[in-house]
Amino acid sequence: MSFSLFKQKGVRTPEDIVRHVRDALRASVEHHDQSSEAETKLRYEKACESLEVLKAALGSDSSVEGAPDAVAEAACREAVPEALIAALPGLDFQGRKLAAAVFAGLLRQPAPPVYLEQHPLLMDQLIAGYAQPPIALFCGSMLRDCARHAGVTREVLSLPSFFRFFEYAQAPSFEVSCDAFTTFKELLTRHPDVTTPFLVAHYTQFFEQYRGLLTSDNYVTKRQSLKFLGELLLARAHVAVLVRYIADVHNLRLLMLLLKDPSKSIQFEAFHVFKVFVAAPHKEPPVLALLCKNKARLLTYLHDFQNDKEDEQFEEEKALLVKEVQQLPEPGPKITNERNAAVD
Image (cartoon, rainbow, N blue to C red; front, side, top):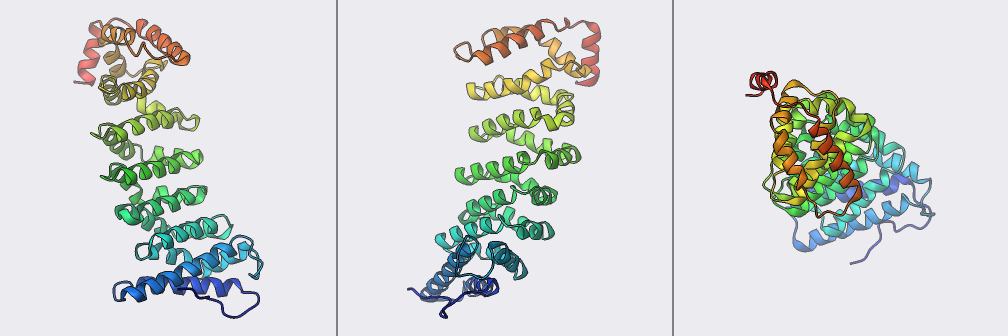
């Protein structure tokens, strides 16, 4: 069925457009469960047409009065971001796709990012969307659009629900878990000046839950979380986080276990984090004691470690690591006593 939202000819105002969108989206939500199939289809079509109009208006549609930024400002005044998110479960695939595209278009204008900073519960609703498989990927796309803006990212990281990403990253659905982890990474890497204070303030909670990803039974989860751990710790902005992480002997133990994982890919990613413990100029006594106790075994392990890998940089790093391990003290009584007191 085809129809036009704007029967009158001439230039349309931003207010006209956003009100039609808001009303069409609200109608699709309010009557979703009580409508017949034909009525539902009609509302879907009306919502989709209104979204197409708004999408065009956020571009360079000459039939709309005012620039795209004026349209975006009007959309915020009429609470269109709320309507877009609330309507996602009740829209069909095409409607959800358009809603996500409009959301992205809004965030390219100045007003909506500020609006989202002032309404953080909207991002909370998007995070919760990962628990609903039909809309999970659309919510993920919209959250990644949010992550483009430092202020909005700060608000997302301040939400208690941010920690649900550790659950969503292990979702039964492969698509959902991968998308959730992609969003998780985007939120934590796009703006280091936002991420660093967050990691420092929530260090214990964050890395306790991150350990769950590193010990996951799911190969993909374990590998991608291990790879990202290396990226996160070695980022220049996160020096304080790195120092704290490698000072903890429990983290070293975990990495040494991962070095023995049956998967060569897991071993390789573990190697890149493990080498930081060994190369650190200052090692906490429990960390030093554990390394010294396992010195001989580590040298044997590294001698045979992935010798079939044709990677010049890896070979150089491995050679340096072997040299560092060789220079570790032998496990004498003092080191053994320190280990027994601090680790066992």
